[in-house]
Length: 160
Image (cartoon, rainbow, N blue to C red):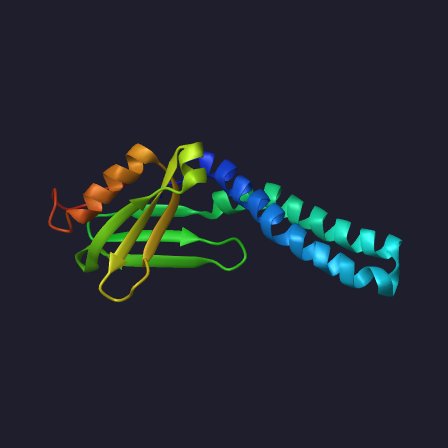
């Protein structure tokens, strides 16, 4: 089984901090505004500061844990992704069912230098398999390999 590029931990930390600043801090400002007249300044500050600190720690610590739990493997007959720390998920997509494969990069992914690989089958509108945080070259190589389908270079494990 293969692991993600370690730079994905930095990406996930950045995404968590951006989410904290753009979503949770404004939301907690509203919570503070609503709490202040009811419970006083000290309690309001303690509650909001605790929530922000908790989410800040999660944004910094959780990506390392999630990184260690993510594995993928491309074999001659299928594509497999295992992920999840608390709730484990394993997705196995037969290569003959793959319709198309995309690589994508958002602005933060470009900044860090990683790409996402998305694998689609005819079964749905969303990606049936996804690998975040791959080195750009590895993502392109996997995309091309999976796009060739199952009739490729002979049997056995590809191990990529």
